[in-house]
Image 1 (cartoon, helix red, strand yellow):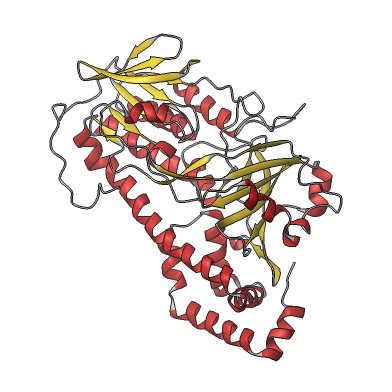
Image 2 (image 1 turned 90 degrees about the horizontal axis):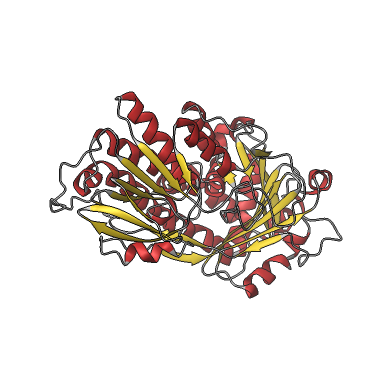
Length: 465
């Protein structure tokens, strides 16, 4: 994404296009990006007295168990997003948050450490994106995506239970083709589908300058353990693993009500990598002794966006969420919130031409894309740690020591927390890695881990749970 790089976008024939009373706005996809966009568009339009007809085209029912109502996501809502949503009047009730995460457990072959939430607050939520895994019978929770969709409906959006099948441009306006044979003409079309939807390819073929994002494959599996057993074993912690498994960038075990979600991110996850992870002793120790990895409730191996298109907009058309620009590996829901709100603000206050989107929506996408570059640099650090046992010992030693000190001294703990949760920009994380005090602390811990006597002592003592 190069919207903020000084590139000059040639003025299109639609320059100066604006929304008017009675205009029809289509939103393809009712996941977080689509619901956020519809919500903010209608809210901002109401502020200026603009009457819009907003239709959300979505074939899935988020009240149905997977896969009919699932959005294939690990389901972590960061504390920063919870705060932002509350400020917008979108509060997440206890029926949506399946479990408050009060800490992270970092597991490595050299030991483990519990990292508490900053300021000891429980503001990270584990959620079900749909109505639960495939084998769910009765439940007492609400789908996160359904909750957001109801907020958009409350603002006046209407849901069209159809599947989008293609796009055409007629007289300068987008025409959405539906699988049932219908054709819907819109004055503005917001595309908010995930990269796993086949419709993404159709938008690339429409000749509007859109290119599909670069992707990599991930892995998500659900296990039904029951609340009591989860509380006694995994608890209210997100368990994160830094293991020497090739191609594995990030792995987590996330408690959610009666279920536990296993989530793997990296370079094209496959069955061999999954087996290596599930068989790792560090993973098995987190689960009950009689846990059987193959007895799963639900599983998927979706793709995720790792590099968005350069130009996620055209006249009267824009792309938000995963099919546009999103954060690398973490906090995709937070990125959906940011891009959807910026897109809605641009459409209402600046216009719906490619030029307006380039000037006012593009910089937000560009900021996320630039931050992802910093994220890739930050993940280089985790790769180095994965391949150097002494570095893993140093990380463990430094983090354990910090957990015994006041919060402001927890430099490495804060870096790891934000890497795991996605609560801070990658740029901020990377710059904190380079701070002299952090570098000095790591160097000292590294040196102590090299010293045979200290290293042996560390192996015995420096595990905090």
